[in-house]
Image (cartoon, rainbow, N blue to C red; front, side, top):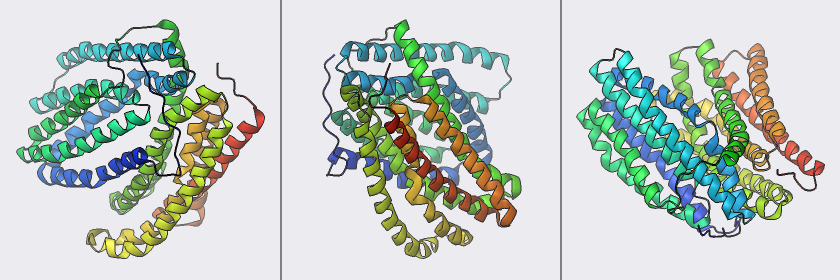
Length: 424
């Protein structure tokens, strides 16, 4: 397998690929709003409830991956950075072999579960579509993780843009009812896997299990997967607090805040996906994390300034924006307050640094501190503030500020404690 050396990171200069990749991610927001509106307008709540229940299975099925793809995410670009193409091939071959094993396991187990259970026709069709989506998504996850170089990300951006057009084109299927909606969901993942498979970087690679590489991938990947899963749970704490202490209407008023923060979070998530393999590649090449930390500090500084400017603009535009959604006028003061969270959303990149250099003690320390800070801030604020949404949003402000500062300090301490990182 021939590999193409990634270009140097142009974090602050004009990087056409990065801009294109981020733009594709943000274009997904209005497209999702349009397709979501059409779906909820035409599908009965009962059927959407059935689909929501079935997607829980998709969430739990992720555990079958055991973090193997997470391990490959780190080890593949790192090996290429060391110019160890043989190890890179073995990691990719092993991950592909394990992905196919997961797929076969699901194909064997699901018919038995269906046979032993009593499902009506609606549930049965939905289950078949959901399982098929999971099977295809396993392969999609593997394929997406192999896009590592600048050229790869340019192709990945093209695929994302094509998928947005496909999503809009297939959306009329929802007008046919629940079965049309299921067909729409199925065709979306089929289209995605076809495009990714067609543009996959390692076209000649075959599935082959290597025990030593599998052990390494599990040892590295499972802690990463576990910490990511715990962070996802911590992120739900504010909503759980609202559910426990208020009602559905309050959660509905909070919904625009969720949308706002989710939109802003696209930027650090996209940057993380883009920078993670490049940082791993550079670490494999230089065996020195200090340059990564320096770049990370610059990203924090530039991102903070840019988002702060957007927050100031957004503060004055929100009154105009909310006029289009009269049912959510009560959300306006909470949206303005939530803007204070936005400049600090990049705290998650600090844990990416811990993952890149495989310092799991720091990684789980980050997770624990994040969880404790979120919990304690909710608890302490509830003593002094009566408004549930004020409690939740102030808690998120405090948590994001504290964790960003702690994350930077942890990364700095790590750099100070080691001259060269032990990467074995």
